[in-house]
Amino acid sequence: MPGSRKLGRATSHRKAMLRAMVTYLLENGKIETTVTRAKEVGAMAEKMITIAKTNNLAAKRQVLAFVTKEDVSKKLFDEIAPKYAERNGGYTRIIKVGPRRGDAAEMAIIELV
Image (cartoon, rainbow, N blue to C red; front, side, top):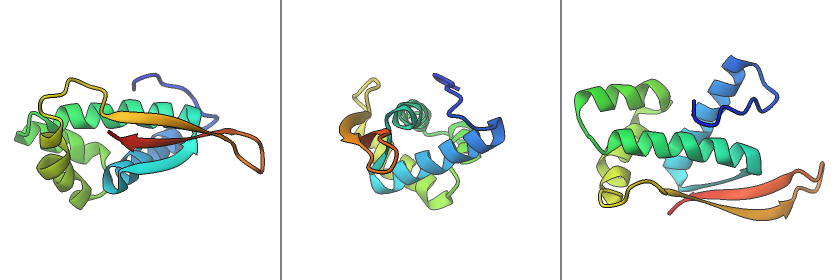
């Protein structure tokens, strides 16, 4: 996994969380989360988009193994990947939005460019 920060979670929990967040990001285009999580999610989302750019059966299976919703993987191959065909990486943007009210964790918005 790129970066592989532990995020204070067991491996299975961390993987599940990242899969869910990447799926949500690809589905909705942006998420508000902590900065460290945003960086991890960004790395994984970039990886998924890069894989989706090849658009063959092997790539579809690789993406489906990670993304939790079939319709999101379809959207990734049909809409998102073609949009970035000429672009080599840098598909996501992280914007810091200041501390969270409860625990003052540094928050950020991650979105698809």
